[in-house]
Amino acid sequence: MEIERLSFHNPKGETARRLGVLAAKVLGVRSLFEAFAGGGSRTLLYARHLSLRRHHVNEGNRRFLCELLYRYLREELPADTLTLSVEDFLTGWRRFACSGERYDWVDLDPFGSPSPYLVGALSLVRPGGFIYITSTDTATLAGRRRGDDVRLYGIPLRGWESHAELGARTLIYTVWSAANHLNMYARPLFTYYEGYAHRLLVQVEDRRRAEGIGYVHRCSGCGTYFTAERPESACPVCGEEAKAVGPLWIGPLYDRALLREMESVARNLKWKKALKSLRLIGGEVDAPMYYILSDLRLPSTPSVRSVVRRLREGGYEASRTQFHPGAVKTNAPAPEVALAALG
Ligand SMILES: C[S@@+](CC[C@H](N)C(=O)[O-])C[C@H]1O[C@@H](n2cnc3c(N)ncnc32)[C@H](O)[C@@H]1O
Ligand SMILES: [Zn+2]
Image (cartoon, rainbow, N blue to C red; front, top):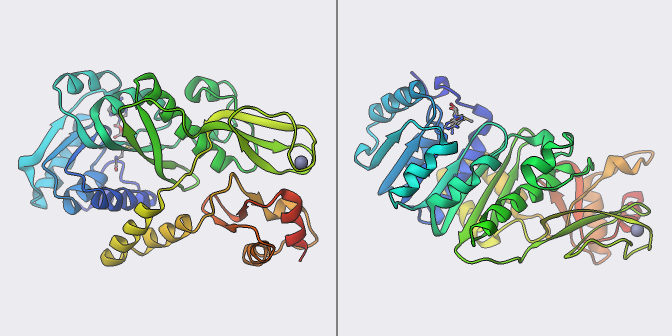
């Protein structure tokens, strides 16, 4: 049986899996808990590339776990470090937490929203440890499911075109909020968006902090995005009414030093797609949200490269963004982006 034929093996998820492994390698992860292992695509990758002392693999469906074990043993991966369990993680995490074990890394790869499982993951990670989270609930995070946004993420979202980053910031806030209720703090090390899923790596500390939480605004007049710790009513550029979304994460999305180290490991392993993604996200400027050039409705849409260049010539920070191939991320106000797009 080939890995591609394992239950729930998702070929589209390869880069996300590899980004997880690269980060775990750089961060020196030695103990790892997987809550939703499926057929084991991640399990095998983690086991091959990390020198784990403990590897707890949980999956709700016994059949998938048998398949996983078969493959694991066939590859002669280190079975003496392996613990397998079949539990519904929604309630089963309590049993694992009671054993007192805490892990460097918890992998949360459920179907849909990870929100119901965050307390479990936070209870199993050691202070200073990491949680690698997937959400395939992109429709809710894009503001397309009224009611579910508040129920699962605690925020009434807006269906802005820049929903991919809004969703990422919302997801981070949800993790931060769950951590905060447990007197912990969670901050992102990177976020990775693939259209059908958000991936997020956070580091967890055992003290409470509000740093990084605030509101994203969009001006109804000029379209400029800006952030503030409290909801504002007026745009700082043109004074028109601003619409706020939040509370959510307004801090940096990336730990640049980690991304650079991941790049170097990806280069050694010749993981080209992961390397390409790391270069893209590592090059993003630290500005809230992004402007989609085709939304400017110009007679012809300019290239991202040319608009980035003109904004930089004008003294602004500007870059492409992983969240949209036709968008520009910049600290310039929206009217300046429009001018740069006009050429
Ligand atoms: C997205 S798949 C996991 C894919 C896997 N991590 C991989 O890399 O291939 C989600 C898995 O979660 C399992 N699952 C769903 N609900 C669960 C629950 N409450 N507790 C434990 N496992 C569950 C499903 O059986 C499925 O295998
Ligand atoms: Zn304005």
